[in-house]
Image (cartoon, rainbow, N blue to C red; front, side, top):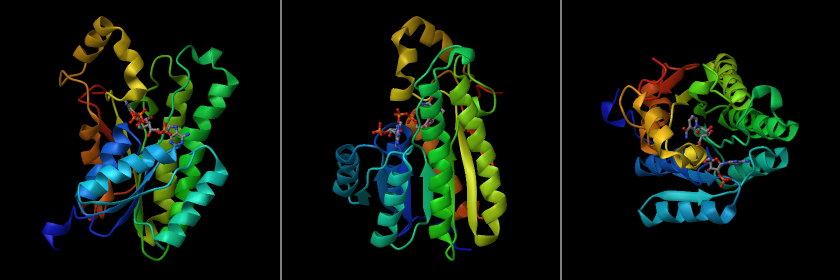
Length: 254
Ligand SMILES: NC(=O)c1ccc[n+]([C@@H]2O[C@H](COP(=O)([O-])OP(=O)(O)OC[C@H]3O[C@@H](n4cnc5c(N)ncnc54)[C@H](OP(=O)(O)O)[C@@H]3O)[C@@H](O)[C@H]2O)c1
């Protein structure tokens, strides 16, 4: 084995959904910095173009293609475009996610239930289905960004937590069925990470400080803290790793 290449992504085609900001943006930048040809995707084409341009300006390879993770036609169009443009896909990172409702599980509005299911579960499920089709013959890796809430439900995050639990289960299902085709499927379960999704927590600084103090490492995660796990699972270094869910949470769930 060439040990200098186990984390090398040179000329690998990598699609990251939810790459316009936060964890997904950090991930596409890290993949590009390690040689990958990245596809930046989320809902808004202009925002994706800005991230892709910043990667190209830094000497990397990137294109942008918008797709709403909860709309089936968008997913089909995205994968048709990848097929026509690149003719292959080596890595899919399902990172796009939403959490529109914070409150008692029993009072979840149906619209919030449907949106959370569509974006956090149905979209990643069908993106994975399209990805394994494109990876057939060459193999590849899928990394699903779930959450520690998918292991133990977060307070007032019932439907969000349920979609992340479904994502962890789906990770194992795809891993079992597609391992023989050289396709590995793993999940990352982040704890608290400071992104737009968690900005609501920071509106009450005192309560937020108290929350952060409960994290064993004593600080909240940043998007870059999650990138190491994403690249680890996507890399050839994880050749024998599939169906796993890695918790990256500063020790919160210990
Ligand atoms: N932050 C945390 O503490 C934490 C903890 C555990 C798990 N996670 C998971 O990590 C992932 C990334 O979240 P983040 O923390 O980086 O939050 P973020 O900064 O708010 O980013 C969310 C990303 O998802 C995209 N997105 C939202 N709705 C979408 C849709 N319908 N179709 C396609 N893309 C969509 C957003 O892009 P546009 O709005 O531009 O479309 C954005 O790029 C999510 O799956 C989240 O559940 C986060």
